[in-house]
Amino acid sequence: MEINMEPRDFVVARIEGDYATLKDEKSGEEMFIAMALLPMGTDIGSRLHFENFSYELID
Image (cartoon, one colour):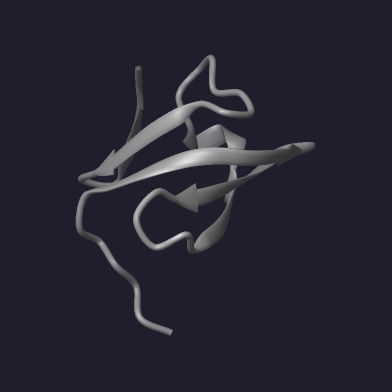
């Protein structure tokens, strides 16, 4: 599996306990990530920008 570290935008598709499923806005690819790595206020439907190993809420 190849890891893509380029800047990407995601939408939070699901939150299950301490983990969220993020969906890449371009490719539709999904990934599972710990909520602790996401910004405060992240919820289902939130848009996130990933760059330089961190996530930022957008919109």
